[in-house]
Length: 108
Ligand SMILES: [Zn+2]
Image (cartoon, rainbow, N blue to C red; front, top):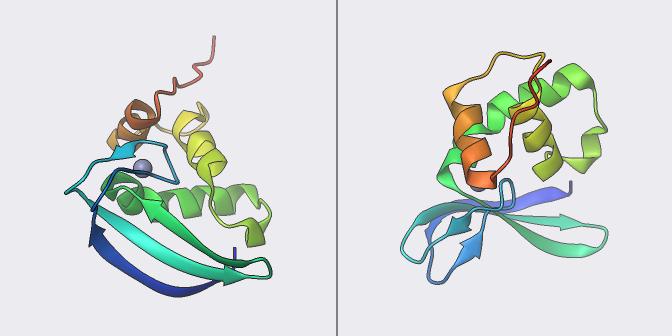
């Protein structure tokens, strides 16, 4: 992930999609907006409220697995965090799975 240039809470003027769960952010809803610069140019990341709140949980989880750091935290990391049956399930994980439409893999 590049260098963060700016971030703020915005009120959606049109429909957006959360970068971290794919959920629709409807017009009038608040979302967290971040602007980055990397070697390819500028890009924006938009997160719904739930994903923004879960961010540090996911960052901690990703840290456990020592994944490639400069990729930042992506949808895949959120998915692994929310569906990993080796870790305790939480309301935040349940909420993420509901938003993303993903099922937790239970051990059989
Ligand atoms: Zn989200």
